[in-house]
Length: 63
Image 1 (tube, rainbow, N blue to C red):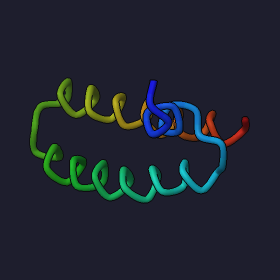
Image 2: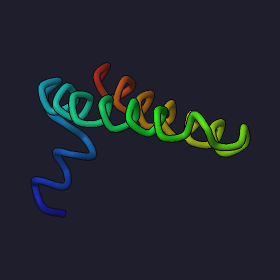
Image 3: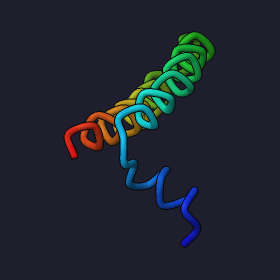
Image 4: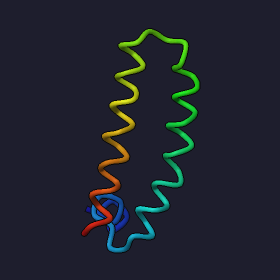
């Protein structure tokens, strides 16, 4: 694996994780705005994906 991919999957510093948070939080907030008029099942699915993504980032900060 290249060093870039390894650093994304298993970051050596919290800085990388916080950069990922900074990129993804606005993305997920925009998705919530777009999804608010969709049916409930689709909204729940998108919310679940966002929580999984953000939880993965949170777990990696504890390394």
